[in-house]
Image (cartoon, rainbow, N blue to C red; front, side, top):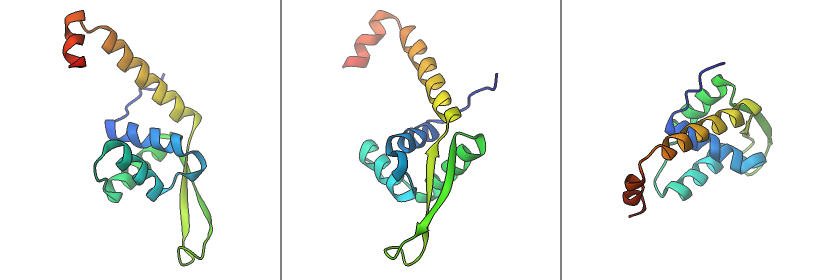
Length: 112
């Protein structure tokens, strides 16, 4: 079985691609992240993460049609793959397992 290595930012980008479904392209992914994280996201960092995710086979990209609004430039759309969903589920299971191992008293400080 292939080892799942998913950095925290990559995980957030992958989740955002999944949330946006058919409307996932650079700007919408960035806005989704900024809205949820309440912080500014660099487009350079975002595109680097998308490239790594695509190299891992966890997202696929496709080029959209020409639009007047963008001066004839095409959008690059991203879609989460089956392997990407699997990676997210593996990471979630690992996190849940670790949280479940926290001693009862440790959970009290997590709630405060």
